[in-house]
Length: 618
Image 1 (cartoon, rainbow, N blue to C red):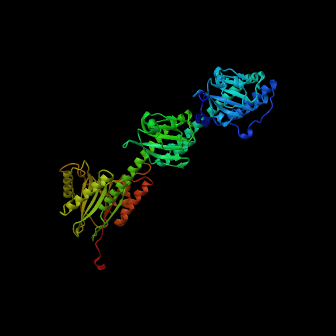
Image 2: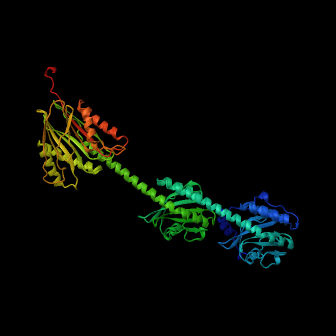
């Protein structure tokens, strides 16, 4: 017997895998059929109609097997009954429904050609055995059995199983019983096959629906830890596993590291790092294919992590042809996983790999953005420290400066250079580039200006000296546009030179004009020369210096603030103080932009000429 039938444990092992997808169709204890007397019911058309109606009104396999048992018992009063179905992968027969058998017998797997049932299956011919002990093929697993009736279940010339009825009495079954079962077997077989097909199709549809839902959901999670946790939860909707681990490849150390794990429903991440030459996950990774092992205790490749594990499935995660990790699924029941599980997880693994790589990329970008934000904050601090802490004070002039930073650093700078009690230098510049590079270049330019200011150079000489200094340093094609002016409070004159910056506005008595000083930006060309203009002012005059961020500001319609609108604002607010005028200009620009982000720094410097103080007031 041990040669003909595989062990009870082995049957339990693979039986579990089939039950996982087909369901367990054993009746509960309260449905067991009680012993009854033998009776033979004549075959009548009414019975066949009742049989057809009962079999054709359900596609649920469990219900169908119960009905089949009841219908057969209506004409053959049995005590021991079983429906065995063929596992085409292993080519053996397994009980999918039974009444009266022991648990040990139920777990047996019968090979084709072995025993009475195996002979019936192999020969595809029914058998009526009046004395099983006299039959050379009989396998004695129940000493009480004396007679047996077995009929093959065939659909379209394909064997799907066997109906087997046993009795504790010699010669219990009659030719009428054999004729009846043979007559009805094809109808029963077709109904079972229809139910199995329906179950498979329904299960596949459900699996596809779940997989589609999983794919949609995974693409929306960009944080790696929540993503891995959700993967574990979603896969459990397809497979009721006991242990689940996501291993990701550490290419530098050439090991697999556990990133997420579940053990009997509780979060569990083993601290172990698996070398690439160990365990079933190693096989899945190196061979780039799913590995399904029915009993890990019999597989030398298994690396012990969980003592309870009996069956295991490892599926590689492949992204753009490169293995990035392995999904490892385990169960305490031997042979729990089957080909349907393997297909479902393998299909999902491709989407999971993409989602994991997307989350990793998001992590890297987020980290880079954090570093960039830190660098920008430092650069912004540098830029703000370059701005003068106070404004110069003169008898005949007042000064104001306003600055609004862009979302990314634009490189504006302004400064006041106090030469003596009568003279002040005014600097407004815009360095090339953005972010930290612009801030650092602005710091260099500001330092050079401060070093040159001690010589009280004229505006044109200052710009020329600054250009020469930048040429000497050759700072990788960086340059700075700048307007430089010197206010002389003793005679109320302003000397101006321009190196590619926006031209200042001069306002007197409602008339507004630009100061057309021009020149090349500093640092672009060697030996550049710069024109110098002198303005004689009188009380009430205003000179407005501004960066290109003012006139280039855009709204949601991509319209620019422009020179005309700036002139209009200056004209309408010429009566205000320098501070009020600078504030108003920036307020109008901000109002014009609306919700649009500021893409460049916006800087305004206003010089307002004052009337001399009344001596009588002192």
